[in-house]
Image (tube, rainbow, N blue to C red; front, top):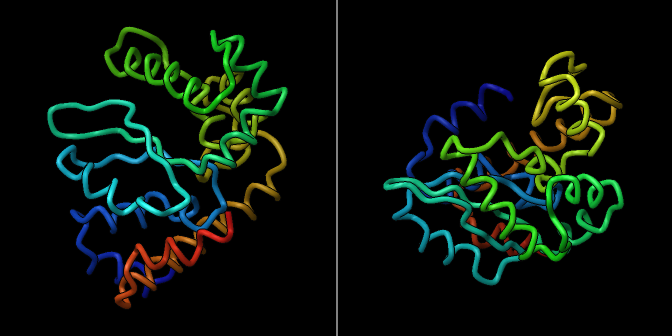
Length: 199
């Protein structure tokens, strides 16, 4: 990330939902990613719902604490496509899933995520698949216990480094583009409308 972008980030109001969406979810907003895990203050949930209204993105609250909320933001069609893959279904079935509709999967995942957050269960590795990470990298992470990766970026890479490096570069470019647009006064709602045709 170049210095100009870093300076723009420093001038942005980090407390605003719009800013956090750009910083945490740019690849999702522009249609490069299936989903993102988004953390905001609980009091900002209504504002998030308002921003997403009319967009191609849906949200599912996974967990709320006194102050914060963990929200799964996703593109319905892309998530359906992800869940249709045999390798993904095999992985999910081994983790106790029996239905493949996004709402059913997210209902089950929320239970597993909350159990993990409450320190009652191990980390639910299917999160990587739900976020659109390639199954080979999720499986590589589990097999290697998070070590011996070949490259790291948005996730730890165990296979096909050149393709993943290129993808991460595209993710970073999407983030830089949205930062420039927002810092130049373009409303996030307008940006989301402009990119909605790319999904």
